[in-house]
Length: 155
Image (cartoon, rainbow, N blue to C red; front, top):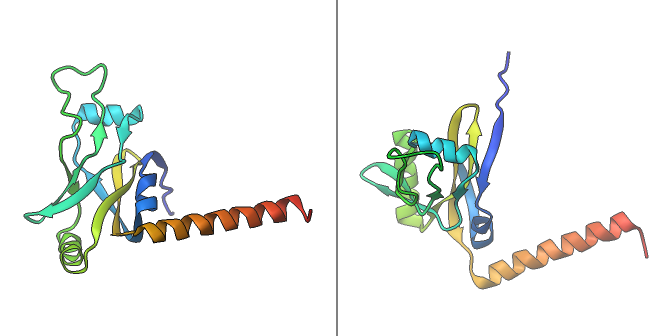
């Protein structure tokens, strides 16, 4: 029997969708301390300016702010520390080749619980130019206006 996966989204990086074209998505695990997981359960995380780099065959996430657990003590970790991401070695090597040759960036898109595990959705992204951002915004506005016109009827 197929097992249902209950995904509870903790945080999303909406700015990434505005600033980048997301070419591909990957699911990764993330190495956290116990008090960081408790903070995540309270939703105390910010992915806004986070990014990932590959060094020595490992992926690390930088700029991800997980607030210290309020009831924690000496076990609290620094909020902005780099966090190691967990992926298979062949996936890491594939991403390393794409990032180095074709100018892609690795950007965290969302953070969620998959059953009891914390997972990070990592996007392989290419940067948008200002005119691309304007074009995307214009398309969204036209689609919203068309939907409103259809919904409200012909006026």
